[in-house]
Amino acid sequence: MPRPAGRSTLALPRASRLAALAVALGCATAAAAEPPRRVVSLNLCTDQLAMMLAAPGQLISVTHLAADPMISVMADQASALALNHARAEEIHALNPDLVLAVSWTPRHTVSMLRRLDLDVVEMPLAMRLEEIPANIAQIGHWLGREAQADALIADFHAGLAAIAPPVGDRPRAVLHNANNYTSGSNTMAGQILALAGLANIAEEAGISGGGSLPMEQIVMLAPDLVIQAQRYPGASRAEGVMDHPAMAALRNRGGGTLADAEWVCGTPHVLRAVARLTALRHPSTGSE
Image (cartoon, rainbow, N blue to C red; front, side, top):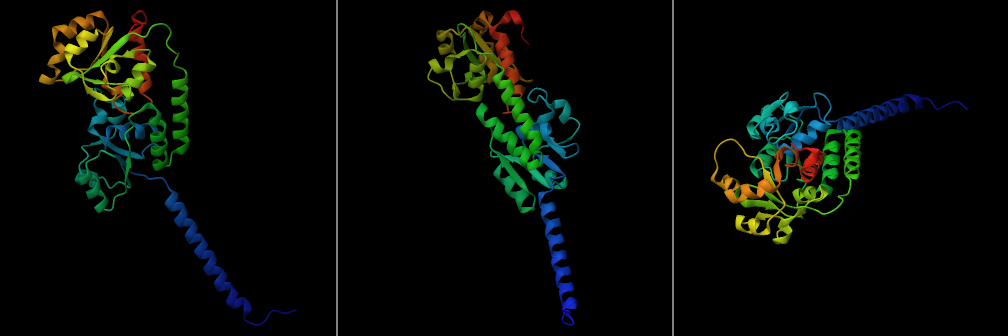
């Protein structure tokens, strides 16, 4: 049966319009799913996770803290990138399409960047070991690097599983910082101490989080090991307690200094801190 005259001339333009619309929608979806090309990080912890996961050239700037070997295990990698001081005006000048911040990033900086129409995402800081994989996955999702994040998470879980359970007595240890600051068992530092097979005397003093443990109480508790925080350049009266003869006498019994870089942020590098503390527990294996 022959077609009615004019039917094809009406249907063809409609089909063309629908096809064009489908193509346009497909392009828009692809563009929305496209990973960011210019990423800037505003925090040491997002700096390090982004450096571990970003594609070559994707991460264009990290904070100046990331280039400080005292607090960053990735200082060499950071030195190859533009460094920022997390100021809104310098971030805007970098023309990023994604800005990585944390929940503690100053609110005025985040709000100003958003008023400038920049896409700012905020990662919660990991306070415990079990929170590290979620942050890796979140950064991987934001960067469009999910497969790389999955691999890093698998490596982290494998590293945790490979830590041998401590055998024998658990030496009693104290984490000692400026102003007699210490960390209890309900902190990432406390978890790292436990993984290394050490008992935390902060628990005996009733400290589960972070807090001050008076030097007199530390002396009376007589820990087997004093894990002292690293010293920073310059002078600080807060660090005076670390030089006290009583603390020096306790350190002579056992212990050492542990750099902040490996455990200041919740990254897979915390496993290095576990290894170093384990070495302090077994001095015959050597320590750094």
